[in-house]
Image 1 (cartoon, rainbow, N blue to C red):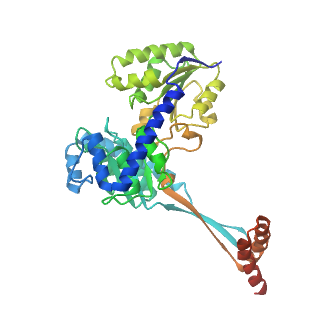
Image 2: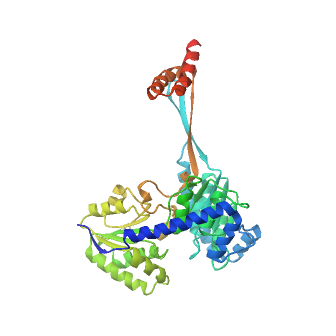
Image 3: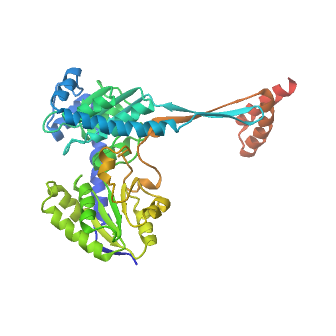
Length: 425
């Protein structure tokens, strides 16, 4: 039996909040389409109190950011980027071009072609989320994208030196300091000073995620990466302190970040809830995490692993931390998730910051149909074909009859003209 010891906001409340976001984002995108740089500047000043001479950073401004960081942090960024680059390169190497003769005289194949340009959004209004630069810019570069531009909001009234350095080290070709919907829209539709890109990637708040949704089609997007979601699946092989730390560690992302404990131990559920309250009294980011936990936190108790699996697949959460005696049961049987973190020895923070897997992951049940950001998202798999005259004669006769069955006379003639010619040769 599945039972809730704690529930989050109801679906009607969430829908009302979502509708407000939709309307605000529509208006911002339309204004930027119509008024370009002036609209971008208007929103940047309104939302971020940021109105520089140019949103694009010069080489001198980028170099100055390095001077603000200590060598240890620069070395740590290098280490994290090495892990991300290594795994991204392994993934890229797994993507092979194909060219094969499928029947005598017919050769089919596909090629992996990197996109020409990509815009990478790095969130950073509340915290300088420099790791998002590795995950987007670096991954695009490993994929072979020629022009990669990156944008992040100002932090404490200026470009975040941590984010700028991470973007530069990852290989960004252009770096901009502006954030939110205005940044995503400007990169997607273009302005007088920003050439539009082919694809927008990167995580963000509900407004950024909605902007990507509305812009999809005009540009490609990686996925709907909205407010962070974390699901902790645990049994009594771990304790409430650890579970609470893993829930709050993600709840601090923002006040709308869902954090759910899914367990088959009612005692662990109660211990975790008590631990959450205790840790909120000492967590420096409790002002955010507390709101997220109160409004979007849940505790669900099941009787069996199978029930836990069913609930987890239905939730289709972004992050799934598995801390059970048999973690492989969930690795082997879970179908809907952004990323799995198997065992208490690892955790979502490792994935968020430095272990090597990408942290831009699907939210809002998008894990039902897509995985997270990886090199393959920046690559088009395009097919080609060729045929000998003899093969064209064979294929053409089949194609002609199939076109006739569908009533496509023009299609049929494309086949018939070749059949007539190649029969004579």
